[in-house]
Each structure stands twice: as C-alpha cells, then as structure tokens.
Image (cartoon, rainbow, N blue to C red; front, side, top):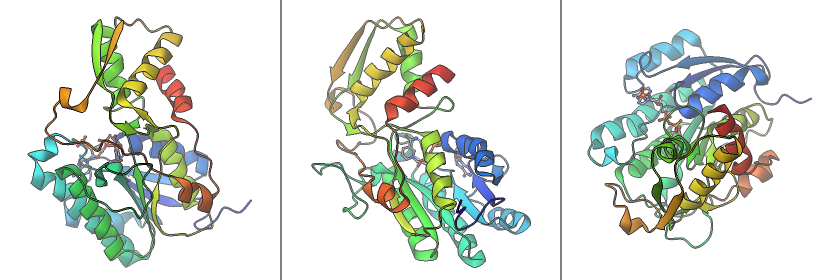
Length: 296
Ligand SMILES: NC(=O)c1ccc[n+]([C@@H]2O[C@H](COP(=O)([O-])OP(=O)(O)OC[C@H]3O[C@@H](n4cnc5c(N)ncnc54)[C@H](OP(=O)(O)O)[C@@H]3O)[C@@H](O)[C@H]2O)c1
C-alpha cells in the first residue's frame, strides 16, 4: 500500500490537543501509525511566539496540525484582541515555523468566513465575507497561512460535535434532560461534522501521496438546520434509552433568538474538491451522531 508523502512513523505536533478535534487527532494517530505530540493550552500557549518556536525546535515534527483556536463565537465580539491573537497572529507563528522547516502545516478554519447569502453550498473559492469577529479572525489566520507557507492544508469545517468538549449535541442532551419544552433555530442551514471525521480526513490527507496543497472544505452530508439536528439528537438519544424530559420542540427564527454575533443563514460547505482529489467518501453526520450519543 502506498503510505504517501510522509509515510508511517510520522511525528506530528498537535496544538489544542484537549479540544474536540485535538482529542480525536491524538486518539487516531496510532491507527495511522503516527506519533502525535500533543500540546494543550496550559503547556503551549500558541500566542507565545518564543514558546511555539522552542516546542517546534525541541520536537522536530514532520508536520504541524493546529487544532487550537478561540472558538467562543459570541464572546469574540467583545474579546476582539484575544480572538485575533489566537486565530490570526498565533497561526502566523506556527505557519512560519513550518515554512522555516519546510514541513506541512494543517490548519482548521470555519464556515463562518462566509456571510451565508449564497443559494446553494459554498465552494472553496467563493467570496468570503465574515459576519463577526470570530469569522474575521479566522479569515486573517487563513490568509497568514497562505502568505507564509507553501505546503499547507486549510480545512474549513462546520458545526463540530463530539462526545467531549462543548458542542450543540451535548447542550441539547443536557437541556433535553432538564426541560419539557425547547425552542431551536430553524432557518440557519449547515452541515454538522464530527470531530472524529475531521481527524480521520486530516490523517488520510497527510498520508496520501497527493500533496495537493491548498484550501478544502470538510463537512458531513446532509444539510440540515439546528432544529433538524436537535430532532435527530433527541431521536438518537431515545434509541439509546436516555431519559429525556423534552416533549415539545419549537422551530423558531433567528430573530427570535438574538445572539451577540450574527451567524450565516446558509453555511453549507461543498466538499467535492476534497472527495475528488483525495478519493475520500465522507460519511453522513447521522452515522457519526449514533456513535457520539452512544459514547455520551
Ligand atoms: N466548534 C465548532 O463548531 C467549529 C466550527 C467550525 C470550525 N471550527 C474550527 O475547528 C477547529 C477546532 O475546533 P474545536 O471545536 O475542536 O475547538 P475547541 O473544542 O474549542 O478546542 C480548541 C482548543 O484550543 C485551545 N486554545 C485556545 N486558545 C489557545 C491558545 N492561546 N494556545 C493554545 N491552545 C489554545 C483551547 O483550550 P482552552 O479551552 O483551555 O482555552 C481548546 O482546547 C478550530 O480551528 C475551530 O475554529 C470549529
């Protein structure tokens, strides 16, 4: 079997290793026969340029995967400086290290670089126009990678969930166990994506011989709304015998649930480029949701 560009026994440095995607990257490394050196926020603050350089020099990785990010979309509207420091400036520090060492940089970005006004799914070179600070900071981060690195994969993803960390699935299960009635936004469209699927795709790309550097979308079919996702979560939870109080689920409009940060009405990512170039088949989110609910 062709193990591709970096082969087995690849040493990969992973930032933000306690985040949703970070944890899955650490867990999956073994099945790709790679050595993962994980750094969580406490051990390596990526906004500290010297610390980043020191960690990279000390461990001499063959690739860096940046799973660290400031992901509090609403809080970012106030924490503008921190959001930019983590999502934009620190990304440049990591990208520069990769460029200096001539190693690949894998950076995760977001559907929130789009404003959601498009009809149909977003492709990689569609116009970007973030609606809030989080999306703006992630966009600057993307551009820093493109400016500094030659060997990079920027992977934009959406609506990430896993059995750990903070995410919509866990919030719904918690609220569904506490309340009889819930209201969920039904006019924002996107594709839920499991952190495990993202990690799997990242290793598949890294160990492929394609070296087709650039920007890609990774999201799981099919498109839904937050309301539709909530319905699926509760159905799955009941299949697994979870005790839920919730009996009424109301479909509401974005206007009925005001948040500090505006969200795109449509953030469906088109993943044809990824599937075609790397010959990958991304599985539906409903399958990953089954596994996630079982694990929870
Ligand atoms: N979550 C989503 O729905 C979503 C959607 C689209 C794209 N994405 C992107 O996907 C990627 C992974 O997201 P995720 O859901 O796995 O995020 P997450 O669970 O919030 O994990 C992010 C990790 O980064 C760490 N971190 C924050 N600031 C740091 C710093 N200065 N130095 C080092 N580590 C730091 C956090 O640690 P602390 O918690 O200790 O601060 C956390 O462990 C991110 O690039 C995100 O922008 C996420």
